[in-house]
Length: 260
Image 1 (cartoon, rainbow, N blue to C red):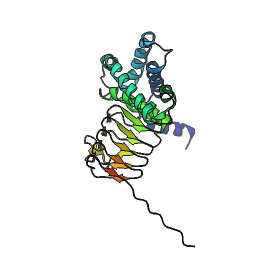
Image 2: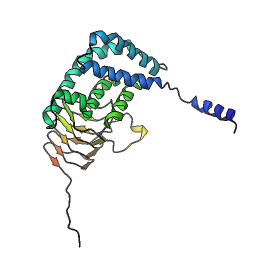
Image 3: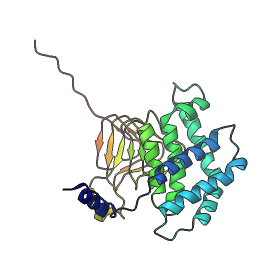
Image 4: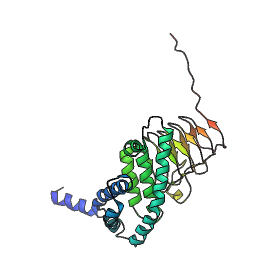
């Protein structure tokens, strides 16, 4: 095959996709700017609100070029919600600080805890997801996933405060419902029991009620699976059925002496 034929073949197949990779970079920069404006004492929202609005307009003009989308209205609604989002995030910070003996300050939580960054990006992206914004919420969550190892779908519903320790390997699916005062440790999966395209509009992921702690490596699957309030789920537990309130579920290890 000649170089000309190779180029023509690639160009023909490339037309199957409509992608502008600048959207990825602009969305990541927008996500960072939002985070810094909320928490960096040296950055004023008043002085940067126009720049944020411009960035939002740029990314929506790229991601929504093929469909009708009222970016100005969505941006206004997002700004109205921003104070409440910050209140939630401050509760998350307090929860992380109070319940992790290793934390020395709230500033440390904000600057150095990957779990908190993942939660913050989730809360921001979730607000856009509620307005059916294409691409952007998922790209924001994937940006946080890449940096923290924590994969939270922006469609999940998560109460406040919310505690993630370490964060590495945590997966929270799109239709997960997590209520208030829930703590997750590394490697927890809140996933679907079955995965088919026909299930896209159904609840596929678990519900976790108030005051639940789920320890490292636990896997909880299924849209009908409900973890009752005040439960403790031990490490490496595999669950596909509901657990009543006030339960402790744990994996029983066996120790055997080696034969010499």
